[in-house]
Image (cartoon, rainbow, N blue to C red; front, side):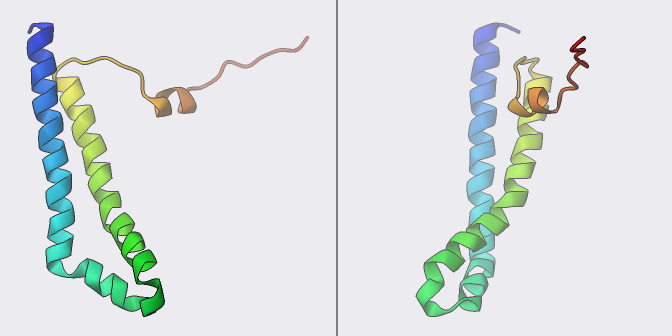
Length: 97
């Protein structure tokens, strides 16, 4: 597969993932979950409740997004470094002798 074709497929897959995230948000908005969370907090803190509700319902969506991106990159044979890979990498023992 050529590099330009791989890039195009990656952009299309990323757009599909972003569309998924938007639909994920709209699903929970339509179900009334966000309104329910806003009603749990006092009216003076409705904005904070909405922010907390959006964060709560989007966490699983972003986890699915991460897994989807990893799958697409593996399928298209895209190589790169992830921040968490270097963070969790085992460091060699250092001797100060």
